[in-house]
Length: 282
Image 1 (cartoon, rainbow, N blue to C red):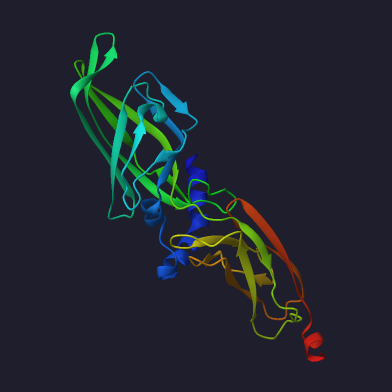
Image 2 (cartoon, rainbow, N blue to C red):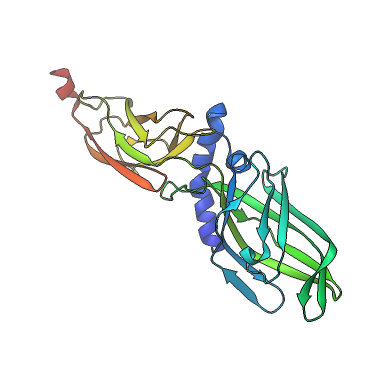
């Protein structure tokens, strides 16, 4: 992921993250959701053991202790050809990042072949937790961890030590949430413009009840459109639906297509705003 793309994505997520922050108990942060989750998957990794960077396209599903940041990866999941499992123990930094620390010592050094034995692996991975896009399925979970700072592992053995640079790492985790099924206008009444901004209630529905701390549904309206929706709404845990408060700009008349997405499913809704006189004649 280039620096420009990463910057653009973070800027796009700012209003979404702000909404989740104001949702209080209805929705946890991505850090909290990752901690709650019980599975992790390596989405991609690029490492360098000193002979050039090597990239792996990911791993299978990896079990994680729910309610903690603790989990284990095989070195092979990171593209490192070592016959070991790496135990990661996490904590949250003051900046809100997840710090994953590794310090594994082998009472019986591991035979790597060629007469070499591995006795210890240490390291620290600093990760940024971001909500996954509504366009993505959340089978593993609703959070993506991205490497936030230069990170590395150090392998110790009879040869001394060697640094394994982690150039790129993306992990999936968090809480699986059901996909979107519909985005609707529950009212049959005409929507009409006014001299001041007016509001109309729409609704999103999930395929099943939201779990854990609630499911977020991303919303979008065309830039400069006469009907606007917030960047996201949260479906509370144990429920399938949430209201969406759409703002209609003063004196706007016309049709606007709005979009909602969650769990890899997107739904559109055309909202027609009629002249004020149409409602007055009812």
